[in-house]
Amino acid sequence: MNKKTMRILVEAGALKKVRIVARGSRFYVEAVTPKDTLIAETGRGKVRTWATLDAAAKWVRSIGVGKVMLVLDQWQPSQQEMALGETNGEKVIQEQMDV
Image (cartoon, rainbow, N blue to C red; front, side, top):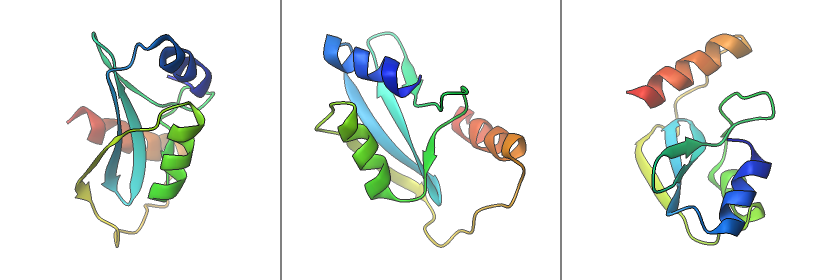
């Protein structure tokens, strides 16, 4: 779900909760609706990730959300990022989120 669509859902009151989830050394955003859990995406439909918690929090705040749940059980701050091509890295992130 891209930023514009997520902002529309926030304005409509359709989100039950928003989570910032740490996976490895990166962060991504999940939005929970009554029917589904949506993941923030780039304009090209790829999973949107951030290197720092404050960057992810600023993005969430920019869509109009003031409260989030922070999920850190799989955070590995010292883990180095893999130097993969864009497609491979996103595939790894997607596979990890599907687990």
